[in-house]
Image (cartoon, helix red, strand yellow):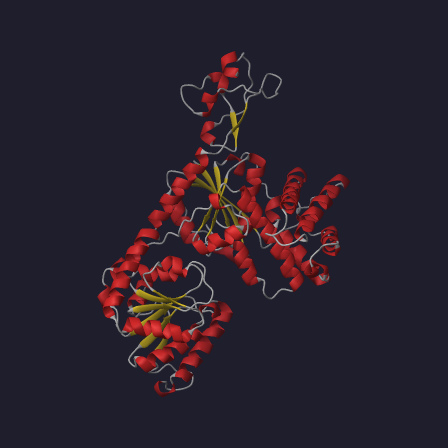
Length: 562
């Protein structure tokens, strides 16, 4: 079958999110054809280029989300009136209550406005100028000042309105793309959006215009990401953008044939945002276990007195609590060492790493050469790629216990890597940690250094328990989190969606008008039952079951017409 893979800031770009997962999926499903429709997030991402693509990728079509030149479309009076009505309805739906608790009529209002804008863009050639216009800002202002609007929206000032209008213009750029014709997404058998938000919007439009079924995969729920990233915005901006992303998420979940969360944590978010439970299928991320095989099969190579933390250095990882916990551990087990292995994430991560280095020197002053020196300090800060830790597997092999101290976590990939390596783990209870561990490691509350220290001491003092937990963790990871299980799951889901997707068939008479009841029921199954008078056109169904529109030049037997 032919799959339209929809990405945002991801595959096939070198620096894309989830590029490894998408690449493994495409390479693993070599019996299918893939058309990739990619939205890029920055000019730098585009300049870095693409990863090598396998032969089953037919074509790659890209569009930037980070910029949009004025398309030069000048709307006439009627088109301007259509835009004002549709955009006004869309922003009015944002000011009619929360994205989940609001009545279904408001969800329908949002959907009708969204597709109305899409149809206008298809008819008139684009909405970039209209979405940036003064009329769009005034429509947003009227919605915020309307009776019944939330207090935060009513208090929106001019900078708030401009910020929201700019964000909506960026998020709605897929409406103006020419991806939805019969030679684009209208020709695929299935749209697979690799995230929610703007990546799923082309899939919604392909479903609306051509009836193409939509599959949505979210390993990190886009709405949750918006909540976490919008903390610094004003209350009015947060309220309006949260409403928009909530409405878009609900519409995406409602139109999708199947939604595949990557874990139960994401699944709960999706259910809270309106996804029907019958549509949800949990599919865990697929990871390459082969590079950890040697370490996983040799657990005795670990230093029994060393704790290891591996990941990106940033405040959400709460290394401060880990360092305070390690101070308590040293009181019980004085020979224990802690190796913090990872690179800082951006400027904030670099500042946080400096703070952690200084804290380590303060907590263990007798063992450090100076306030900012490592020396004989039992805490070391290292990066992968050096002579001591050339690979990621070597990092996990450096210690007998792997620690995760995060306060915010989605799907803990580092924890799965430690499980592949057969390591006993101590983790904080955040995100999908409990679901991933499944009883093969110790879990403690976040921001609780004392509990973290006690769990680590228990495992340091019990090598037999470490071995049992490590073996169980490796077996669980090999069963649930490999590339093979991920590919197998999506292959089955693809076949299921296509098998239950209704095919809209059209047979034309000699005047060009459709003939109702012109196709026998057997025509739905390609084979010897299908005669020359039953050549049909399919929209939204498998391309192998379709042909061009045909004219009925010969009478159709009454038995077949019935």
